Amino acid sequence: MAKARCPRCGQGPLFTGGLALREKCSSCGLDYSAIDTGDGPAVFVILILGAIVTGGALWLELRFQPPTWVHLIIWLPLILGGSIYMLRRIKTALIHQQYRKLGW
Ligand SMILES: [Zn+2]
Image 1: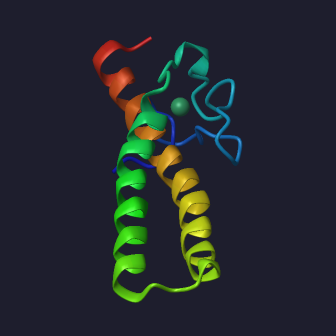
Image 2: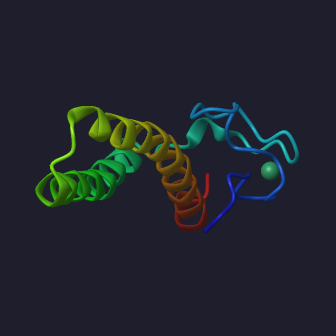
């Protein structure tokens, strides 16, 4: 899977640190303003992570019937951390696809 780097030179970082894109590549100057992944990354995260968490929570509840706090300490960090991690990875993949297929 592609690193969160510029799709043209592979050097400059795509993100400012979180999920926000930089204005341009700090290495080759590629303008990132043409990037438009829309809601694509969020859809994949909702479908994939939602299925994992829902399935896991159902299995845990039906198998062990733990108290609610057990669900909270397992699923809340997984949802938060997993969402940010997956959003960055999927957004990067879609940006690289857009650059390869359409350029800008
Ligand atoms: Zn670059």
